Image (cartoon, rainbow, N blue to C red; front, side, top):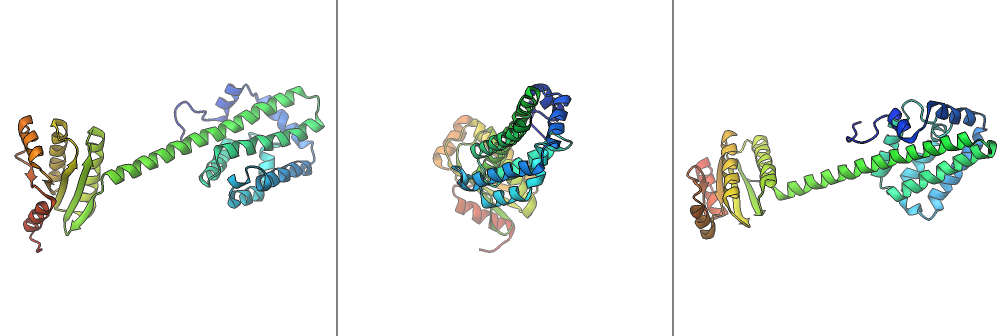
Length: 291
């Protein structure tokens, strides 16, 4: 598992940040071992009742509740007798990631953790009512556990954003095969350096996958054609040629043609047509196919 720069990456970093010593971790483990396990199980069952019937019950899918119940004894040991033991961070990061992906909100998950930790601490407090060191140690551990959740939520949010951006990029570069060995990409809107890079990647990937010999770039929907856009188009055609495909730019209107001429852009190496229909006819003719 990889974490972003600036995140806590191991238990030692967490301990330093929250001033939790090895001795305090050992204190929690030792005190917990002296308490009947049934008392922890009772608190766990109360928490499960809250998940099923509490004010946030709709935030916990049945699959999450069932998985939590099945892992009851494992969870109890991890927050008591084996708190912050070897592999704890990886195990609980995985649990949080799984639950978040199943639809549990940050609010619901945070509330669940706080309630559960408070219920476990009430057991410790019942048996050791005057142990201030134990109380302080357990509160520090609670903060670490909540931070693990917050980090996984940030990771999931970043992942969701990346997936959304990928989907948007794919929607903005819809390459389609419209004839044997002929691909089409209709461009709409503005073309900047970032979008140009995405378009070129999509174009070259599709050419490589399909082994197409012709690629039609239709720019009739492009809002503005300036020097930068024209240069992007030239780069695309050259890149396609290197992949063994001929690039035809269609949708060259009178205004666009006049703009390109006024800008003094040399496009002698680019095959152009006035419409997508003309570009398709040209590609079919040159490919030897029949209409």
